[in-house]
Image (tube, rainbow, N blue to C red; front, side, top):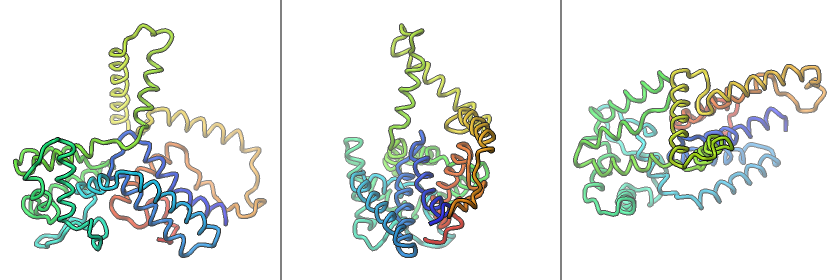
Length: 322
């Protein structure tokens, strides 16, 4: 196996790892990553040599083990309640949401509606008689989720996000539906699910900021002031990222620093580089090597391609194994 082919098979794992550590990760994105990785490595078991098949089989077994330990139905409901990840019907068409295998009994609309009611009761400690009809209306694109109102709004949000190269604002869309009485409980459930961050990366980074702020020179700060300073710093970093997109996204200007360090190390090591022709199977070109900033940008575009159902996401165009 050549280095170039090994790079193409390991890149989905690296991109997924980058996405899964983000502060704004959502449950539906985690579900989509599980789906894509399982589909990708399942395809490798049919067309690749025996050594790649063994690696792919191990990757599939690891994904299945992790999926069994996760809150599967919560992630599935989050994916279904994200209208930007569903196929929008054409005018005068009647379709159902089909993000998963319709042949499974657990994924039939009435079973999912019952599950929605159960999850709502567990989260809000009350029973809602309106949430099942509201979910079935959403699932079948019935009024008020018809093509003339809701689907048009979703299309506008999606097109605006694509023009600005950002993720669609799910919260603002579901906040609009809170004003409709019969959809209030379903909107509350959707907003609650999309507020969940299924990783500990943000907490770890927050505690790291606490350690930077509450140091030996500021050891008399109480917890309230430390938390306030950390919030101000996080807000300032977010504003800088929004106003100056080229300065780095989630990791801020630190990515630019690492990029400069990477370029410096690369220039210093040019005299020690070995000709790739001297290494058997080393067919990687310099375009395959990415800086940390470029890699994070590619990971975000990769996730957007997966959400749109692209079978050949960015960075994997050369592979035709799915």
